[in-house]
Image (tube, rainbow, N blue to C red; front, side, top):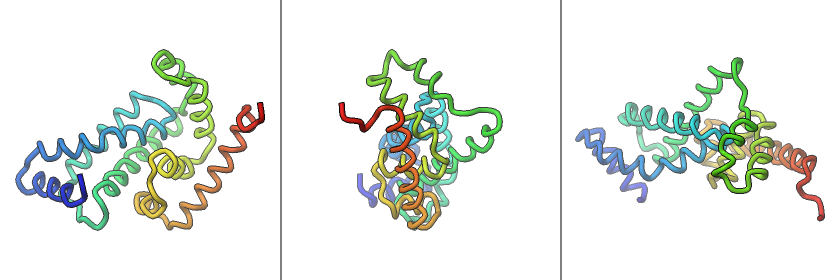
Length: 182
Protein backbone atom coordinates (compact mmCIF):
# COMPACT_ATOMS: atom_id res chain seq x y z
CA UNK A 1 0.00 0.00 0.00
CA UNK A 2 1.64 3.24 -1.08
CA UNK A 3 1.15 6.71 0.35
CA UNK A 4 -1.43 7.66 -2.28
CA UNK A 5 -3.56 4.64 -1.35
CA UNK A 6 -3.24 5.56 2.34
CA UNK A 7 -4.40 9.12 1.64
CA UNK A 8 -7.33 7.72 -0.33
CA UNK A 9 -8.27 5.47 2.60
CA UNK A 10 -8.03 8.38 5.03
CA UNK A 11 -10.31 10.44 2.78
CA UNK A 12 -12.82 7.59 2.58
CA UNK A 13 -12.95 7.38 6.38
CA UNK A 14 -13.23 11.14 6.94
CA UNK A 15 -15.63 12.01 4.12
CA UNK A 16 -17.65 8.84 3.64
CA UNK A 17 -17.36 7.40 7.18
CA UNK A 18 -16.11 4.16 5.58
CA UNK A 19 -14.85 2.14 8.54
CA UNK A 20 -13.65 -0.67 6.26
CA UNK A 21 -11.10 1.75 4.83
CA UNK A 22 -9.77 2.35 8.34
CA UNK A 23 -9.65 -1.42 8.87
CA UNK A 24 -7.18 -1.64 5.98
CA UNK A 25 -4.93 0.93 7.65
CA UNK A 26 -5.15 -0.96 10.94
CA UNK A 27 -4.26 -4.23 9.22
CA UNK A 28 -1.18 -2.66 7.66
CA UNK A 29 0.11 -0.95 10.80
CA UNK A 30 -1.15 -3.13 13.64
CA UNK A 31 1.92 -5.37 13.82
CA UNK A 32 4.53 -2.60 13.46
CA UNK A 33 2.84 -0.43 16.10
CA UNK A 34 2.45 -3.35 18.48
CA UNK A 35 6.10 -4.33 17.93
CA UNK A 36 7.12 -0.72 18.63
CA UNK A 37 5.30 -0.86 21.95
CA UNK A 38 6.65 -4.32 22.73
CA UNK A 39 10.18 -2.95 22.58
CA UNK A 40 9.34 0.19 24.54
CA UNK A 41 7.62 -1.82 27.28
CA UNK A 42 10.47 -4.35 27.34
CA UNK A 43 8.29 -7.26 26.32
CA UNK A 44 4.97 -6.66 28.08
CA UNK A 45 2.50 -8.18 25.59
CA UNK A 46 -0.67 -7.09 27.36
CA UNK A 47 0.47 -3.51 27.81
CA UNK A 48 1.65 -3.40 24.18
CA UNK A 49 -1.76 -4.57 22.99
CA UNK A 50 -3.52 -1.97 25.15
CA UNK A 51 -1.29 0.85 23.95
CA UNK A 52 -1.69 -0.20 20.32
CA UNK A 53 -5.46 -0.23 20.74
CA UNK A 54 -5.35 3.25 22.30
CA UNK A 55 -3.21 4.43 19.38
CA UNK A 56 -5.72 3.27 16.78
CA UNK A 57 -8.65 4.71 18.73
CA UNK A 58 -6.89 8.09 18.89
CA UNK A 59 -5.96 7.85 15.22
CA UNK A 60 -9.54 7.10 14.24
CA UNK A 61 -11.04 9.88 16.34
CA UNK A 62 -8.46 12.41 15.07
CA UNK A 63 -8.25 11.25 11.47
CA UNK A 64 -9.81 14.48 10.22
CA UNK A 65 -6.80 16.35 11.62
CA UNK A 66 -4.38 14.41 9.39
CA UNK A 67 -3.13 17.09 7.00
CA UNK A 68 -0.76 15.00 4.87
CA UNK A 69 2.21 17.16 5.93
CA UNK A 70 4.05 13.92 6.60
CA UNK A 71 3.34 10.32 5.68
CA UNK A 72 0.45 8.55 7.37
CA UNK A 73 2.93 6.21 9.10
CA UNK A 74 4.84 9.16 10.59
CA UNK A 75 1.58 10.65 11.83
CA UNK A 76 0.52 7.29 13.31
CA UNK A 77 3.89 6.70 15.01
CA UNK A 78 3.66 10.21 16.47
CA UNK A 79 0.33 9.25 18.01
CA UNK A 80 1.84 5.98 19.29
CA UNK A 81 4.76 7.91 20.76
CA UNK A 82 2.34 10.25 22.57
CA UNK A 83 0.22 7.34 23.81
CA UNK A 84 3.31 5.65 25.28
CA UNK A 85 4.59 8.78 26.98
CA UNK A 86 1.16 9.67 28.33
CA UNK A 87 1.00 6.19 29.82
CA UNK A 88 4.59 6.30 31.03
CA UNK A 89 4.18 9.70 32.71
CA UNK A 90 0.97 8.66 34.44
CA UNK A 91 2.53 5.43 35.78
CA UNK A 92 6.12 6.59 36.36
CA UNK A 93 5.85 7.03 40.11
CA UNK A 94 3.76 3.94 40.82
CA UNK A 95 5.26 1.30 38.55
CA UNK A 96 8.50 0.35 36.87
CA UNK A 97 9.01 -1.93 33.89
CA UNK A 98 9.81 -5.32 35.40
CA UNK A 99 11.22 -7.40 32.59
CA UNK A 100 11.97 -10.36 34.83
CA UNK A 101 8.29 -10.87 35.61
CA UNK A 102 7.25 -10.20 32.02
CA UNK A 103 9.71 -12.70 30.57
CA UNK A 104 8.99 -15.32 33.23
CA UNK A 105 5.31 -15.21 32.32
CA UNK A 106 6.05 -15.53 28.61
CA UNK A 107 9.09 -17.85 28.73
CA UNK A 108 7.19 -20.88 27.42
CA UNK A 109 6.27 -19.16 24.16
CA UNK A 110 9.38 -17.10 23.46
CA UNK A 111 12.50 -18.28 21.71
CA UNK A 112 15.94 -17.23 22.98
CA UNK A 113 14.44 -16.08 26.26
CA UNK A 114 17.82 -15.36 27.85
CA UNK A 115 18.88 -13.07 25.04
CA UNK A 116 15.53 -11.29 24.98
CA UNK A 117 15.68 -10.75 28.74
CA UNK A 118 19.15 -9.29 28.37
CA UNK A 119 18.08 -6.99 25.54
CA UNK A 120 15.02 -5.80 27.47
CA UNK A 121 17.14 -5.36 30.59
CA UNK A 122 19.64 -3.34 28.53
CA UNK A 123 16.84 -1.21 27.04
CA UNK A 124 15.58 -0.59 30.54
CA UNK A 125 18.88 1.14 31.42
CA UNK A 126 18.28 3.81 28.77
CA UNK A 127 16.46 7.09 29.26
CA UNK A 128 13.02 7.14 27.64
CA UNK A 129 14.15 9.31 24.70
CA UNK A 130 17.18 7.10 24.06
CA UNK A 131 15.06 3.94 24.22
CA UNK A 132 12.55 5.40 21.78
CA UNK A 133 15.26 6.44 19.29
CA UNK A 134 17.02 3.06 19.57
CA UNK A 135 13.74 1.18 19.17
CA UNK A 136 12.63 3.17 16.14
CA UNK A 137 16.02 3.15 14.42
CA UNK A 138 17.32 -0.36 15.09
CA UNK A 139 14.20 -2.38 15.73
CA UNK A 140 11.61 -0.64 13.55
CA UNK A 141 14.06 0.43 10.80
CA UNK A 142 12.85 4.05 10.80
CA UNK A 143 15.27 6.62 9.37
CA UNK A 144 16.64 9.51 11.42
CA UNK A 145 14.60 12.21 9.66
CA UNK A 146 11.37 10.32 10.28
CA UNK A 147 12.32 9.72 13.94
CA UNK A 148 12.92 13.46 14.31
CA UNK A 149 9.50 14.11 12.84
CA UNK A 150 7.79 11.53 15.05
CA UNK A 151 9.45 12.80 18.22
CA UNK A 152 9.37 16.46 17.15
CA UNK A 153 13.07 16.97 17.90
CA UNK A 154 16.01 17.99 15.68
CA UNK A 155 17.87 15.28 13.73
CA UNK A 156 21.05 16.13 15.65
CA UNK A 157 19.26 15.33 18.91
CA UNK A 158 18.10 11.99 17.47
CA UNK A 159 21.71 11.21 16.52
CA UNK A 160 22.87 12.12 20.03
CA UNK A 161 20.25 9.88 21.64
CA UNK A 162 21.22 7.04 19.29
CA UNK A 163 24.91 7.47 20.04
CA UNK A 164 24.46 7.64 23.82
CA UNK A 165 21.93 4.81 23.80
CA UNK A 166 24.16 2.58 21.70
CA UNK A 167 27.09 3.26 24.00
CA UNK A 168 25.06 2.43 27.12
CA UNK A 169 23.71 -0.76 25.50
CA UNK A 170 27.24 -1.85 24.55
CA UNK A 171 28.51 -1.29 28.09
CA UNK A 172 25.58 -3.16 29.63
CA UNK A 173 25.83 -6.09 27.24
CA UNK A 174 29.63 -6.37 27.67
CA UNK A 175 29.17 -6.41 31.44
CA UNK A 176 26.71 -9.27 30.98
CA UNK A 177 28.94 -11.51 28.88
CA UNK A 178 28.24 -10.37 25.34
CA UNK A 179 31.01 -9.40 22.96
CA UNK A 180 33.66 -11.58 24.52
CA UNK A 181 35.59 -14.13 22.49
CA UNK A 182 34.48 -17.61 23.44
